[in-house]
Image (cartoon, rainbow, N blue to C red; front, side, top):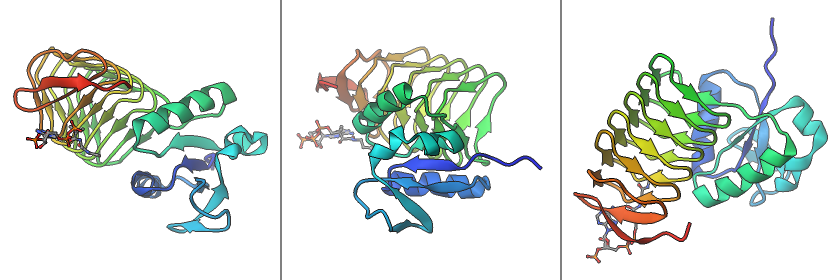
Length: 214
Ligand SMILES: CC(C)(COP(=O)(O)OP(=O)(O)OC[C@H]1O[C@@H](n2cnc3c(N)ncnc32)[C@H](O)[C@@H]1OP(=O)(O)O)[C@@H](O)C(=O)NCCC(=O)NCCS
């Protein structure tokens, strides 16, 4: 019998609750959560709170656990991803059993794919990304590091999304379009033209409103 290294969730908010549920659905052992907002002896839906983010450098924990950043906020996730990269911690990629993944599509370390998501053939998804509930990514898409596709997003074929961009719930990106890095697309948008990096854009048709400064 193979034993799986337990998982440590970084973060203990609403997003972490859904990541924990995913771990439980896939029978992954969860060692605990790291979060500064809860006391160290508390419990997070039945798993122990291990302490605050000073544990990211804990050699004993890193030796026996794998980590996932369970924080929806992109800026916080990016900062912790940077710290984890230099700590040498092992990351885990989580894919909900109800997600459908086409041939040759790949996912980077630390990425989480939630219930009902569909990723079609030959798409490449970077690390620390969130493919949220029911999001659909069609064939040959290129999704950068840390990208958050919120619930119900639809990317048609051959869409590119730059690093750490968030695409709001229910948005649609038309085929062959590119959304630049560090951008924010508002909920319910319909993207029919490329969106430059660091833009905050929304609407149907989606248009740039200002820079994000992200
Ligand atoms: C776009 C967004 C980031 C806010 O941008 P903002 O510029 O700070 O927007 P404000 O709240 O100041 O609203 C400014 C105007 O834009 C409108 N607006 C905001 N978001 C909009 C959207 N997604 N689509 C269309 N119009 C929108 C507002 O109604 C407001 O209109 P008004 O000036 O006529 O009153 C936010 O509304 C949004 O869509 N976030 C995504 C949420 C999401 O998908 N969450 C999922 C988490 S898993």
